[in-house]
Length: 216
Image (cartoon, rainbow, N blue to C red; front, side, top):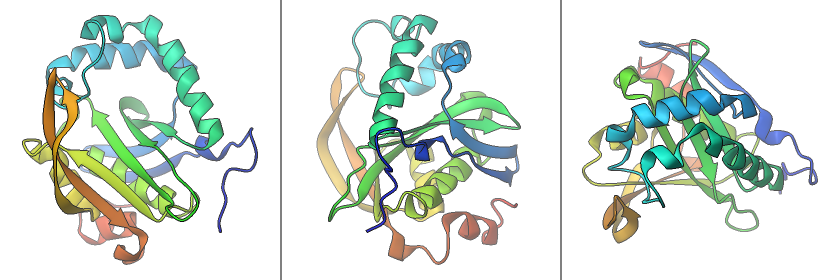
């Protein structure tokens, strides 16, 4: 079996993915950095209205949870999990600027070889194909060097934009998860989307390019 872990100090999660050209500009995906704290805080606080309806309920106010001081501990936790091979924490960049994040989590090995994938982008950049390109890059990294077989993504039924991103990359709807997650202080239904490596003719990026949604 392909094993990308390589011991406790693996650097596999430090790969930079892309770039891929979209109508908005050049999209790439790179590892999170400790110095990302201020831009992370600024973007998250500015995008509270667009993110709160879709993200898990947290403790404390949104501003408190996303103060710059919270980035250090979060970065440390994500980096630790990345070194253990359970998480891939990435920043989505547009023309070299931080505009969102892509995270692959709960990476499992053995007979399952699966994980979930999640993402968010700055609302000022909605509609430019950025999230779609980033997800395609992430999918190819997971099914290629990382050696996974299946990726899952959960989306609320009302989040049509996120469903469109997943569908464009090749994910299929596997059904409804009733009262799946506590979001905005209420247990919300979610749709389960999934993709396995056999379902991709070539790579997700190649399919996106063939469809005219991106170019190299």
